[in-house]
Amino acid sequence: ESIPTTGIVRSGKAVMRYVTVRGITPTALAVHRGVHVTAGRLPREPGELIIGRLVPATLGHIRPGDNLTFAGRRHRVVGTFEAGGQVFEGEIWADLDDMRNESGLRGASTAVLRAPDVAHVATLLAQIEASRTVRVEARSEPAYYANIRQASAAFMYLGNVIAVIMGAGAVAAGTNTMYAAMSRRVREMGTLRALGFGRHLVGGLVLLESVLVAAVGGVIGACLALAFDGYALNLVGLSFELDVSPASLAAAAALAFLIGFGGGALPARAASGLDIVQALRHT
View (cartoon, rainbow, N blue to C red):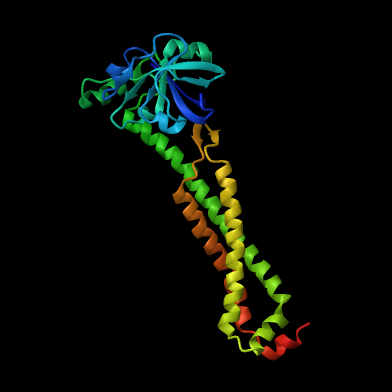
């Protein structure tokens, strides 16, 4: 049995991140094959924890003997474990009864069973679903994590749709802004043309200005994104945190360039097509 919950965990170095904390029984190592203790031991007393191999990458250099704080209470790390690349390596495990006392829950949100072999999984699931003594939703472990992945993919899809809509709006706003800026400098552009500057150079200057404005906006947006790096969210039962990676910053920079280019393309074309005489007479 387990109570997997997600919440803000703070290390002694004042690093606060969202981490899954799972309440377990002593049979956890027998049920979750591939999990083995690498240092210390399993939690036995209230306030004791054992952390997965990947937890120090999230909370800093944490080792047995250090303290972690969550749910308003300090806990002591008594061991570390590995799980052969499974998702558990990013979790914190505590005693199930201790987690029940802290959370106020009497039951368990998840019960993990180990079938003798793959052939018995379907039969076991059918028996559990047909049972009248327990009310649970039984599914295989691959199906369980596949459902979580599908749910998280929906948020990623929604985020991409919002980004496209906002990008299109930014292009339209940029185009309108550059047209307004160009209308105030028609005579200036006509003067440049009269001095011998080519039409493509004048149009290129307008396009460059649009890209530079978009770049400034992109830098401000990147700074704001970095300020929310690691910010934890809990929506519709899904807990996740914002991760601003170098790859996402590079994608944002490319998007800012495309917005600047798209917003300045039409005004640049209009600037390159200005008639010199009419531009000099413009008021």
